[in-house]
Length: 128
Image (cartoon, rainbow, N blue to C red; front, side):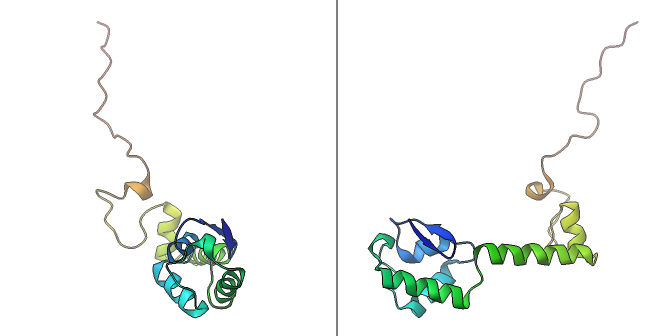
């Protein structure tokens, strides 16, 4: 397991796939990082030389915002939206979908488990 940019990447996978385990690096960025570092994308992480690992680290540190810094930036952006009471900030506060999705049905991931409203429980028998 190699450590690159504060994240641990699996050693058995190809470098191109393994880089996507770093927060903020997807398939497109992984390709461009490897191209800039001049590393073959199909080599396994365990087979990388120390020099190749160092080149990858340098490219990521110089050109990309990843891991903790990126998470902090995203959190600050959401906090800013909440502070200025933007519509998107209000949606974040309320725990509702932010990007215009429907909420009459679906949106369960964002809203949480459905709460049943009246009429679903049987009434207790009254004593007469």
